[in-house]
Image 1 (cartoon, protein in one colour):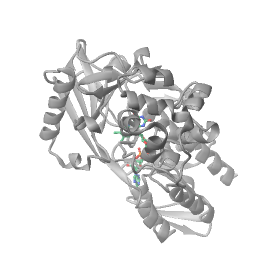
Image 2 (cartoon, rainbow, N blue to C red; image 1 turned 135 degrees about the vertical axis):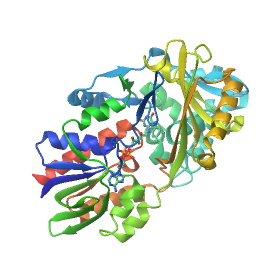
Image 3 (tube, rainbow, N blue to C red; image 1 turned 90 degrees about the vertical axis):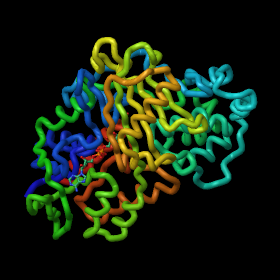
Image 4 (tube, rainbow, N blue to C red; image 1 turned 180 degrees about the horizontal axis):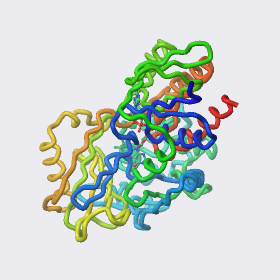
Length: 434
Ligand SMILES: Cc1cc2nc3c(=O)[nH]c(=O)nc-3n(C[C@H](O)[C@H](O)[C@H](O)COP(=O)(O)OP(=O)(O)OC[C@H]3O[C@@H](n4cnc5c(N)ncnc54)[C@H](O)[C@@H]3O)c2cc1C
């Protein structure tokens, strides 16, 4: 009997496995695909190195120290990556970086700016749990929602701010209001609104991290886990290659898979996890002649501007070696909660849309290279009343001792969230097995 089986070799599963392996536990990771890494996929093609999933990791001290333990050297994004742009009325407008800068930015009209000035005196919430849209409208107004917050929400969650919970999807903002009574006061006191850290990748892309994490761990690829049962103090797993027994099972697959794996343990939990919404996303990497996009991280397109693309990351501006000499690599996003149908379009139609809109926005005449990746279920949506899923996961772990749940539908969606949460889970597993 194994000490631990981990289901899924995404960053959540692999970082848990890495930590537990270091403790000398007898452990195997089962992965249904023929490739490891889950969402993390780096491709090198025609002189370009590009990401199909996450582009960068916003690494705080805890995550940086994890990388040191793993033995990977992060590379920090170029200093110009602090420049971010919002597309408005045919122009790229720099995203203001401080409360004062908002007052001078052409992103907001005079009445929009006035609403920002009144933010410290905004009315208290009338609902127990607000959506991001309700929260921002109440404190900062519709324009701020449309031109600053909604594009940010589509940049992180590909989500709809009317549906996402301010408490669960943007917890820091929610807490600033609770702690300081005002976002502006909070931002001034804390000297920042968003999370802090270094924006990093690795030489050759994020897959380097996956490779390094997997070096000392036994991973059985193309070996889907189909069923999990508990008998006495052990778990019995049916996998493609047969039965396996373990004292501990860590499920790190997406919620819709965890749902069917939990069926034998709890029918009702299984039904609940299946309700978590994952939005589709289309990622188009294109190679273009240099000189068309400004220095910076990228740009976001507010839905009011009537374009189909959600945003563009200026990928070759962030890290060296991502595009051949004289070329730029751009990563374009389409889809998300507000445009789910794009996933069903043929690739040629998607490329036509991208080509037309990049021409409109940047005057780019065409591509030298293009690659399309469709993610049918890309990112879990932390919607209103999401707490019930977090409570349910905890309840499942308490009832079925030896079962642990991790993954981006519980930890937060960023790679850094997954790493931090999985470290926590690994500590809990170690404690349980003591
Ligand atoms: C297009 C895109 C862009 C993103 N951009 C960023 C970004 O720039 N920065 C950032 O921080 N985050 C970003 N994210 C989010 C981040 O990449 C993910 O939240 C994170 O990688 C999820 O990791 P995970 O291990 O929880 O899940 P996954 O990566 O989904 O891994 C789960 C694994 O479980 C396996 N599995 C499923 N079922 C079974 C089974 N029954 N048996 C065995 N194996 C199974 C799957 O095949 C998969 O390998 C992005 C995500 C996407 C999709």
